[in-house]
Image (cartoon, rainbow, N blue to C red; front, top):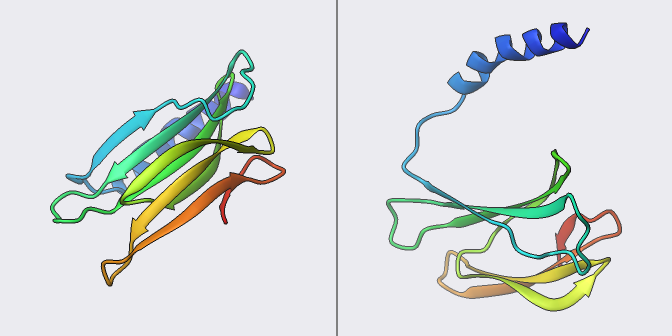
Length: 123
């Protein structure tokens, strides 16, 4: 059964790859200490996708949790100006300050906080 599932996934791989287009956008990865207490085998990852070719690029941050190889997305947020992990915590995870620029050139700052399930939401 396991071999059948793997074979099925491998046949879908070319289809998934053709749905995406090549981009000049940049992708960066960081491993901030988002958990208030470290647990072996668990880490948090943040990917920053930076739009290229514009004077004021939009930056999308994707937060995920890796528990011994099982990845869980915890949120995606546009924070063009600032993405800073704070000392304050909610539900065992550090808060994050997110600042973005709106279409009028004004900055909007929100605080990203973990809910009861560990998913980050804007406050």
